[in-house]
Amino acid sequence: MAEEILRVEDLTKIYPGGVLANYNINFSVNRGEIHALVGENGAGKSTLMKMLFGIEEITSGKVFLHGKEVHFSSSKDAIAHGIGMVHQHMMLAPSLTVAENLVLGIEKKKGLFLDKKKAIEETEAISKKYNLHVDAGKRVRDISIGMKQKLEILKTMYRGASIIILDEPTAVLAPQETEELFEQLLNLKKEGYTILFISHKLHEVKYLCDRLTVLKDGRSIKTCDAADVTPEEISRLMVGRDVKLEYEKTKKEFGGRILRVEHLNYTDKFGSKKVDDLNFSLREGEVLGIAGIEGNGQKEAMEILTGNRKAESGSVLYKGQDLCEKSIAENRALGISHVPEDRHLDGSAPEMSVRDNLIAASLTRLSKKAILDTAAIEEYCASCVRDFKVKTASLDISIKSLSGGNIQKAIVAREFTAGADVIVLNQPTRGVDVGAMEFIHKKILEMREEKKSLILVSADLAELKALSDRIIVFHQGRVAGVLSDVPNVTEEELGLYMLGLKHDPKEILEEA
Image 1: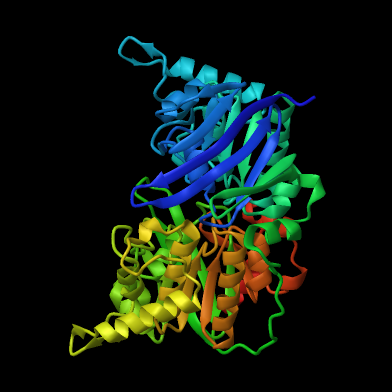
Image 2 (image 1 turned 30 degrees about the vertical axis):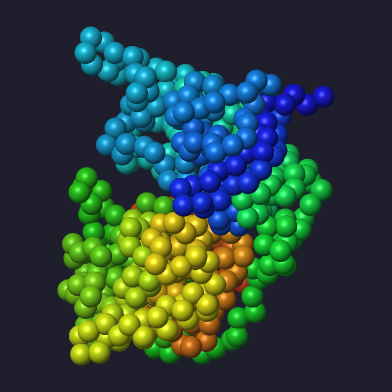
């Protein structure tokens, strides 16, 4: 008989101002189980996990661990009770080594200083014990994203966790890295570890998890065996309707090369070459997909293209001008829009209102003689909220009070309605639920039909395959491969290019 390790009863969270995030949540998790939590953005998953990890205070309800009620006033309390959490945005110090990150805060010292030899020994020992290989002496900024993920898991276990919360752990991994991570998670399960797995990738939930709990509108509506439901049934429980993520793209003839990236180079402040003699082009009316493991130059290249970062050398030619010589405002005036990778840090001004965030890219056309046109602003914002299905109580509230998916839809609304001819999309659906994902995908295809040119950077290879007309793969700051026959490309093939195990950029060199 399964041994219950964690149970929550009638867990409720009400934020100041009466905002109800969770209401009477009930579910239990067994020892040695991988248990998924799924739901739309805003369904209450993050708040629930924050309460279980001691980050958020519980308004009412109870948490039981090993049959005894527990109360956490901080994450330190949760860790002391054997609960660890690996956040979607990794909490690592890039300038420190792997070993230093592992022991940070509870390090053993030799006199006044860290005993580095001991830290390396302990890192290698725990790495070997759980078959989660990491390079103890390397600085975190120099290791792969997959190794960072392993280090985060080892950090929780080093601190004594027996229950590990994983928030979107595969969002930035290549297929081969995801496969390896799952193998390691299944090994941890055999060792008796319990894993709470949050993911919007329902095929992963089906493959990996024993049971799942569906959250909707802050409530737990169903717990069931993962084997007993299809991904389509899970989608219906989450969003209340069927969700389709496969699309029929119209066949079309593309125009000429509207944008050319030529011999682009960029080196970061640590001396690491992030963009290395990069060449590619974008055709008019095309969705150009860009695949690559995070950290291989995609972010830097897109930020150079949009004026957010200055290139070391090279050019980005558009309408007879070099975008490398332009500011963000000048690039926008030329017709470049940008949905950045990090919606909180770069995509929005969190403290500002929903209204102010929506109008930020359209101030000129929403003004009369340099004075903002209030009536035009209200009409524009209302259309953005309506047409892009942004759930918000008011245009006046700060955008940070919206769920992640609704912030993303607001950013997409702002950039898609800015009148641009080229739209750069960096991870536009990362961390959003299947309903919001389907909506954003349809908007991308609408832009394609309007002969807009789009660059789509995504770690979701199924998304790239569904939307792209061509896919180029980045590896170590260069184009490693060009795939024009997108319908017949496999995710495994893309993964080989992403990992640098396959290299064939000849088509790009001919075109650029």
